[in-house]
Image 1 (cartoon, rainbow, N blue to C red):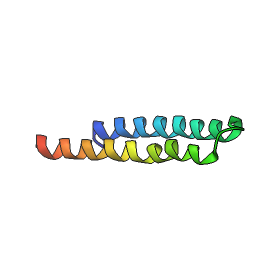
Image 2: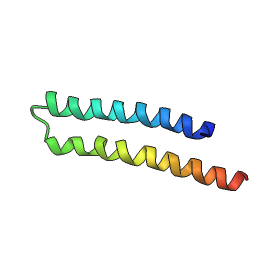
Image 3: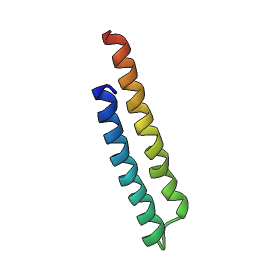
Length: 64
């Protein structure tokens, strides 16, 4: 496995864990907050690692 993929995997795991903690804290402690507000961190938990992988893949294709 290439180095950028290993680093992306590490980044993605950390990113998803932090986003999940954010979602859980919004749902658990946000009594006055609408639960739909937790959808944004969940959305970015998927979008940001996917975009980072796409950038890494494009970078690899252009540098070869």
